[in-house]
Image 1 (cartoon, rainbow, N blue to C red):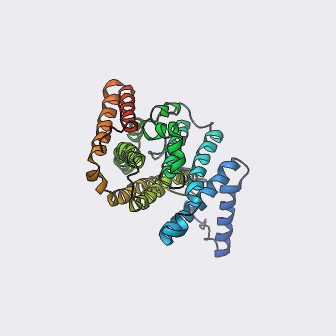
Image 2 (spheres, rainbow, N blue to C red):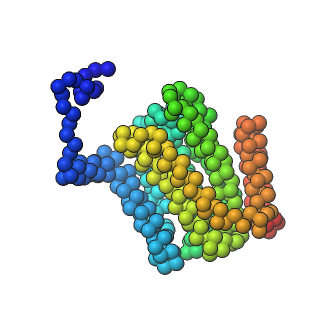
Image 3 (cartoon, rainbow, N blue to C red):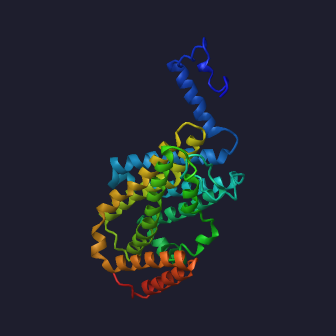
Length: 327
């Protein structure tokens, strides 16, 4: 440990006085300008700021005037579109990130993000964009008309998922095992929680809710709860990566960044509880989705590929379009 690393430990050296109010405001302003308007990665920074501003506006409108300004706001389209643009600018700018790094980097205390994780996040941004547009009464008819797009997102998203890298929770566990102290146990538990949520969300937030909308079974009250669910999902998909930037810049401790991330997707369970009645009302879709979950686990854990799951989803799609899928 050198003097330069901890100068305040040297006898006779006084710790730096805390900045004045004006000084603090100046430092905040300088940091804000650097974070969002520095020339390096400028498009990514500007779209990031645009997303945060729109996200705040959507949150306000949802709770302040849902029936009026929220449902009539163009933000229901521009927010998820900005999220997709933000994810693709990250792919463009951050190609220098480790490409062969096994650990995705977000669910550990020390690793940087891998480029695979950045590219993978673009896939989930596209999935979330479709969910927003599919739930929106203004854009829903267009997606029903362009049925090939509807089919690829509602029934077969994990066929073209192969266009994007896939990171593994198993690799996160291996990296967490090398973390020292209590953070090791914290990240281990939080990563297991994230893995369980991902499996649930893939089938019962992704597939199941899209099945309901496919058959136009979403009531206005259900729609209201789904919008809140997608707001929380936008935080986990896009804002969480901004938190990782703050963590990387040492504005946030790693455990705080990851805790906020975990809390954001756990909040989606509030909205899901509000629409829990659909599981009983449409038990056929509930069973079909559960079947997909089991086939998915079988495909990955025992067959080492998703071909069986792809076949299952293709059969579900054919049954849905021909009117033979049980509701």
